[in-house]
Length: 410
Image 1 (spheres, rainbow, N blue to C red):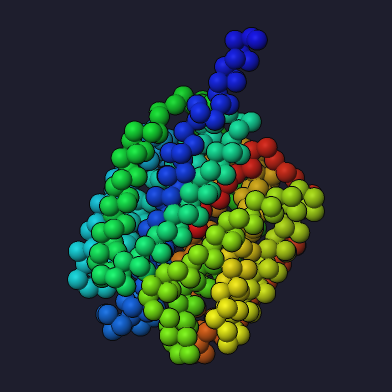
Image 2: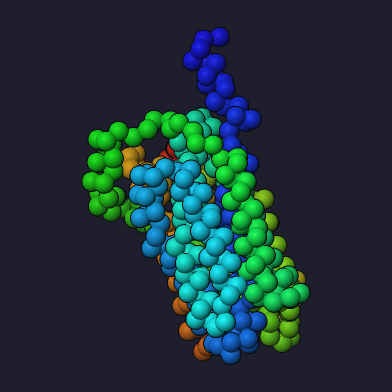
């Protein structure tokens, strides 16, 4: 066996790649971002606040993520990916702990803002780390590991917050999350190596990357993908933010801990989503989005039924639809961009999390006027808009790419 072949075999060895560390990085990045969702009815009672104002504990950090993602990506290129990931992990630990010291809703929102600002340092840098450390023929496995971490982190953060708040207080919930973040930061310091890059960009390539910023907006299919991503996270955040208010009211009267357990339906989507790749490979990205949004719309409409079992099943379908849409749009970015893919992902993240911010704020207007049915109507309308964008603006070819770019999680 040649030396080159031997090197490739070593590089592709699962034991030689920091898969566990990447899973933990994804877990940490989304442990805190949506942790207050199951607490919203409780926080509204605690602070005597409106649904809109307590919803800012979700809206503000996602807005901060959307605003900071491109800038943090540039900083990571300058200071190093591993250093950026570790710094962000420590900063997230500190800001989460400081959130526990809040004595008012405005203070809590402020600390949530800081949490959002430091979060892209983990998820954005980890995605870039995968594509630089993993060889191209194994990058998909690294991405899958990262995606698993983000789903588990998002679910765990909500569950921990709900359980600890019910057992102790919301302050204790943030302390518990901070301790877990700190432990993960320590493991990342020990288990995340600083590896050489595969195909490190030259100075000329970096200049082309900066020059390509505006050029990306001339790519109609890419810009339409930004719109689909915006709609996807809008529907997920809108559904899972305002359903907590719906289920906290009669006739359901769910407790804070029960609302925390509600997010276990995410695991259904996490299990089903990998199978969607077969559908997209066979029928194309447009069919993938149409199927995803149809599943999500059926799930959203099921939550109008006066049955808790039907609502839970509907939420499982809705989250599954969004996860399939995430996988489809992620693959499509790789299919329609032949250069500046990292920059394309950064811009996509801005629109994606912008959709999440809108999804936590805009439905408040509908909730205050007509309650949960109005929120569901809004969600279905946004799902229809995403489908229309994909069917009219995307090409019919599947365009599957070896370098398909992953989404940054939920």
